[in-house]
Length: 136
Image (cartoon, rainbow, N blue to C red):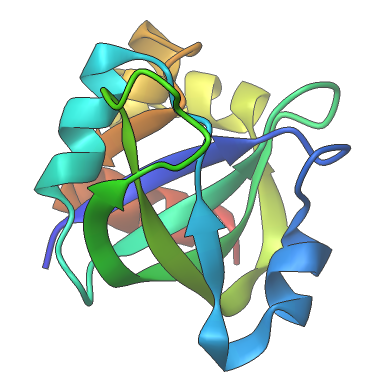
C-alpha cells in the first residue's frame, strides 16, 4: 500500500465534510497540476492519504482511503485531468501542523516541506510513521 497527502482548503472542502460523506465517500476533483495528476494516476484502491487542511490552518487532520482509482474529471473541459474517490478513515488524535513537520528532522525530505504547494503528494513509509507519531 502506498501513502499520500491530499490538500484541501477547509472553506472549499473540509475534513468534517469528508466525514459526513460517509462510507460512499466523495470524488477528489479540481486538480490542475500535471505532477499532482501523475500522483493521482498512481493511486490504487486501498491506498491511504493524509487529509491536509491548507490555507490558514496548515495541518494534517485525518486519514482517507482511496476507494476508486483515477478516472476523468468531468469539471475539466479539456479532458486532460482526472480524479479519484476517497472516504474518511479516521481523524488524527491531534492535528499535525506544517510547523511541526518542518521542525522534525525525520520529515526534512517530505514533499510537504520541499514543495509545499503541490496538492497531491507521495508520502514515504517512514514519513507516514513520523507524522502519525507527531499526532499522538
